[in-house]
Image (tube, rainbow, N blue to C red; front, side, top):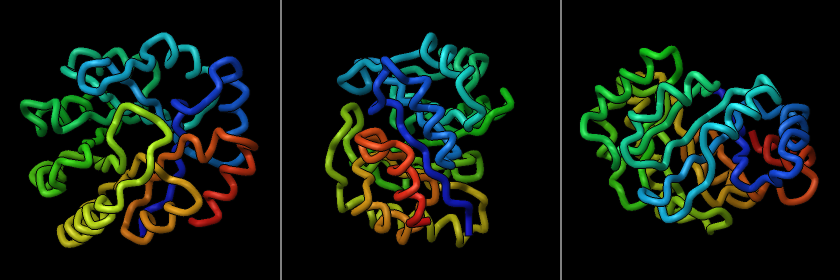
Length: 217
């Protein structure tokens, strides 16, 4: 079974004390830090970019999981890698040549992820599984935090897990959106192993929240 990993999303963090909160995440045992980049085009909102990553990279040795919800991601990937990304995830919906884009990311010495929105058929990623280290299934519509988990996504996670197992590939399955104490077991049982959580981590006692979620692992 693939290692199960919690990836707190700083989209839900308090940026006035972001460094302190990252330290709490690290101390509680999370291994990834999820970094949502939004451009106001591919998704409605604008979040943050290079300066934030460059600043917080100094805060911990966590794996920085950079999720690019942006158009033309290839223009920006080298700079994100230079500033400290360990894994770069791009959306299938934004790519002209997914295999080439994923290989380009890996050529920079980091892991490559391929993301899909809830309305995108999961089968659309199957031709590119050999090129990806991870597939991210969005379980809410990207662009806003605090949304409710979309139940129809569970079947997509199961199908992807079965396809990866059938082909004997070493590809992680990440889920992002609406994950909390009630929904985390659903996605784990379906086959996801990298779990993004925002509000469920940052609302209240961060260390306690991380430990509660990881108890499900």
